[in-house]
Length: 506
Image: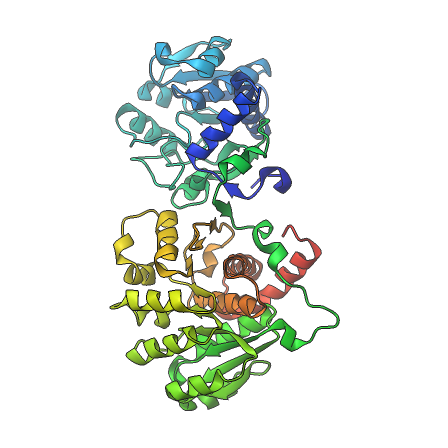
């Protein structure tokens, strides 16, 4: 990703919000053609970074402003000595406004967008510029355009998309019938939701965000509620250890272990909670699992907890301020009762894995208890657990589903996956983009739950703790690298945290 963080910001815009940003900018006195000229200039610069003057460039333009950006890029490239061929989808007479002005200024001929003709000239092209449809596409692509996109995707050619690969929904990331598979995508002012939500993210390639003269102050009026999950979102809420502090001021996390044969998941979580900065971590284990846990633990403390009465007894210690239950704990009515006790204790609580699945048949009972809880609650479902808890949200795009789940449950919801969405009950959401594919391994989710619990123990607000936990998890996965297993993630947090302290931008 190529960006200046201060300029690009962490806001993710819907197509409607981006349209409003354009409108407010024009109303403030910046002419629309100026915005288009700057946007097309960024596209031309992307082409110039890829190949030298004299190269053959194909520009595929649509009938709207996305096509207008393509016309500007074609003119700039032509003037710089590139051999440009421009193709237009639709009739010239349909061009209007700024796009028509850009078309009229073209110094090269424009051909109708015929799939067979384009396919015949694809060989030898250094770059194809996809300026067909931007983030505002609202219908599936079919017919000749679909045939063209198929030909481009099959060709051995570098594709640069303008704003968003044609065929990707800018709000949901969904493929609208078919979509261009770009190697690079050049967007403007702020990234869009479709750049980070799957499958749109997979079609974008390298992301570049160019500034075209829109004042960031317009965001105060637009008030976007979705963000990229970056340190800017939560860094100020992350407490740093104080020289006059001690381990108890950094919080005490309580992680519940399952039985002897399923205790490893809780140990992974407990170790991660300690590594990410909790002052103390206690593993609460049933008597049958005490010895196997004792054989593995060092800095993590261990206490035997027998049944529901044991849970109530261990919670008598007020210093235990955050709790995690679920990893390897078992799916049962007793688990539901244990969750109820924790939710009634006033602690910050993370519910993961078996703690979620145990409520599959009565999710509303869980949500009712969460809404009555005195402390913050974070749910961390993967796709299957999400569907079991929120079957009424089936078919929704991931972002709106996560937001609805948070509103319905009253908890911060971490809807896990390659494009993990963190959603707050108030509608604020973050989309994560730093998780490597190697994190898809057994126990990885247990580590994530432990990181979030450890941050809650340090008294971070729930949304910020969940967002930071997801980001740290992804960064540690990248640091551990190919071949990682869950045990590698927590140790990899140390250099990630060190870099975060030295460079707050992450």
